Image (cartoon, rainbow over all chains, first blue to last red; front, side, top):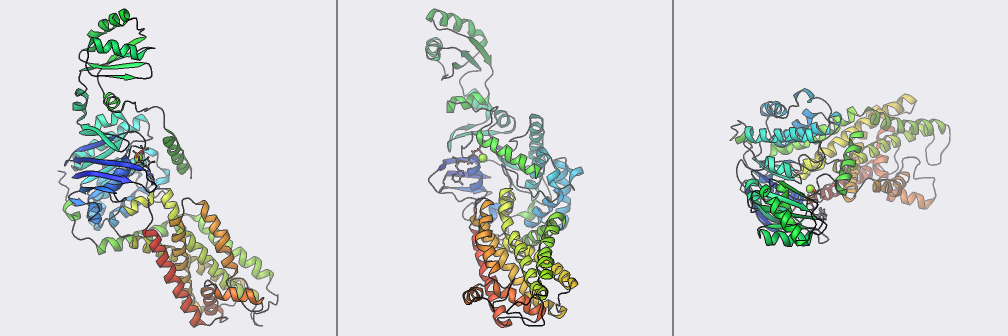
Length: 330
Length: 270
Ligand SMILES: Nc1ncnc2c1ncn2[C@@H]1O[C@H](COP(=O)(O)OP(=O)(O)OP(=O)(O)O)[C@@H](O)[C@H]1O
Ligand SMILES: [Mg+2]
């Protein structure tokens, strides 16, 4: 459904936003880009939906070249942008109806389809409210519905749950899984929430600074870490402890600067006593040890050497949240 | 697969779909109408402001003798067509500039990613802005007649044609300005430094005769003077440039501004 080959975007002014990414999205699949702020997720989507011209490489969506036949691409994709893109003065139903008209749906289909997508996202009761009276989660659901209006074969979701509270986020996940099941549509989504990528995606690509570092099914990526478990040891002397861990197991490991050593090993619980003894005899102080099952967070850490901070909002996100609040108040 | 019946209907037939293009024009037009009708406070403001000009200046100077205005035509009658033109111009210019708000609020992306040409989008928006402007102009014209300006109802069709040309020019200009701007603050600057001076140098408030010669020349050079003069000629029979010159310059201005607006919008990035 989507095939990208060395897709590249250099913005005017020389910012290399997307640096030769190649990937494909199969029919009926949910494929995700997981990456931090500024990784190039939105830029990639904009190229795939023909809003931006790539400066290198090529991409085909539904079999059509994004540069050569943009109108054919536009007809077969639906998109939910990162920032709200609704007409707030109009009602939900009007937003859907105008969209359907611009995609050339005849009246009978339009009316039936509006009912269908409203039911899919549970907004039938509020359909005739002006959008400015919707909550953030309702707006998101309306945008999902609108993205589906014209029976797209590929749906692009740019950070579908950004800025929503945990409960609303879960609800949106359910809607996304429902529409995948009921519409059979292929989905390309971006996110910087680990749990979201894990829950929704059949395959994930980790993207950082415009490059894909690794991709695969979440389960494969996790087992590819080289152990069935994760052991995190906190210490004032991470370098010393890393050496101890290396001597002890020699397997895959990651050292962090912030007083942590993370090791990927099988059966980590039974290894704690060994580690404590070895650290003790090497004279390396150990504050605490934590064990857990590997998550995408660990995969991310392994390939980027950093954590995505989910709790601390980045400056860009704070600004966006502020903008949303302002728009709501208008 | 989903098995939805509509799926094959949206298969990719042609590059240019006349039905969808027409719908896009219609949708953009309809949207302007709905917003116009629903934003009552904006509507009221748009009508009341020119009304205040009309009442304040027109009634205040009604008995004054102003050089360049022939005897037998009082100032209210002279001013009324100018205020009609002014309200048409401002209303359409705001319609054009509101592209900027659409970008700010994200809606522009939704429109630009649809499988229709930008030409259709800009056309629909222009027609919408012009329709709203003409309705407002008609309200002001009726109000001025009620206040005692002697306007000729038989001149309405010709006046409407000049108003349409003025509206199309102003929407085109507004879209062009909006396409070049990063945020709405710059618009204030354009208004104060460009639009207001052009407004005073058109024939809106005083005639191009009986003023210092340099001023008269500037007023004749200003293309905005011509649709204003045309509206006045149509409604009151008083014109300074002649209907042929008015019509030619108004049409030329509209064509040029529409082209500029469409071209700028075509190059706009989101
Ligand atoms: N219009 C633009 N002009 C120049 N540089 C840009 C432009 N848009 C984005 N960039 C830069 O390109 C890079 C990638 O941006 P992009 O918006 O694609 O990231 P993202 O992964 O979507 O991030 P986020 O999670 O914050 O949405 C960033 O460094 C950004 O500053
Ligand atoms: Mg983004």
